[in-house]
View 1 (tube, rainbow, N blue to C red):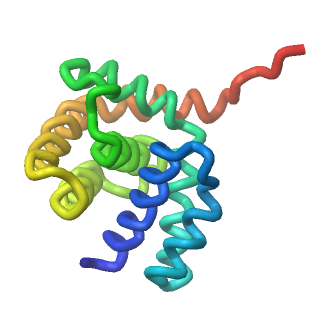
View 2: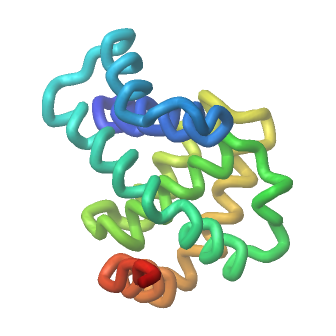
Length: 153
């Protein structure tokens, strides 16, 4: 597995665990994963950026995925696949450093390793549908980041 793919795999594992066990703290889970599978400092930081980039946007990422891929209800998607979609969309629509094709290919590769037999085709199909709306999705997500929710008085 390529180094950045390994870093994405660590991020996926952390996001998956915190998704299904909400009492698990992402920083602690990340620390544990890095002890089990050490990464170079820059790759560990890449994993950290994915995790802490995706987590605050989970609700908005899910809304965007649901809006542009309505034939796949998120509550019916396996947790591993849901987190692969979140990572890929965050990478191409928010982070902006990863080209869409690379984000899709990386998600498909991780789906082959961590998902069900049908996961790679599913991930590719959903992300293909989302990629055709890349600019709109990016604008929605970046507006959400620029305007954090207001605190009630």
